[in-house]
Length: 239
Ligand code: UDP
Image (cartoon, rainbow, N blue to C red):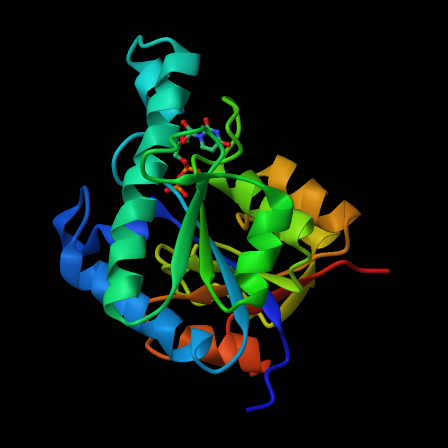
């Protein structure tokens, strides 16, 4: 099939794995996402994955309750490793070859992040899951996704969310909210819309990486975005 994108970095929030239970990991939800990923990974596109940790811990939220921010962020990064291992297991049950590469060394059950090795895995058709964010506190897994996308030469960032794109206001509270089929990063920043955090967006913009924001809950959407079908919102670099 004529895929528009050959190498993609898929960013999934931790919350996407919790299903309707509101916390932690819902195995059926993880399996469902893994099946969607497997469907495309078998057909050629190379996929890197960054999974958040918000379903388990968020450093900032813990800091607001008195915990040291850096400690909270370390816990948050560990949460992303838990999610990465769950996704690895689910993907392998789909018959895919996978590797987890962690920004924090945990050699007993993940590889360390080594850029050239990650690229080699992708060339061999393995799904590479980048765990532990960037390895640094005060950052997010959105930033990790853009960073890894740049490092492995991805053509696009797929930002999976629970809404079907970027709107001019919150569609959950405003029924008149309008969805953009395309928008530039500058426009997103100017209008203070939520796509990714500012660090992640400027890193993507400066390096010419487009992002597609789409609804992960609609089955087949990962495939459609990679085929270049109009799904969600395309965030462009601009002039
Ligand atoms: N985190 C961090 N550095 C990173 C990536 C993540 O410190 O480079 C920590 C941070 O505490 C964050 C948590 O890990 O709140 C979980 O990541 P994130 O909030 O991005 O997850 P998501 O919202 O995508 O589920």
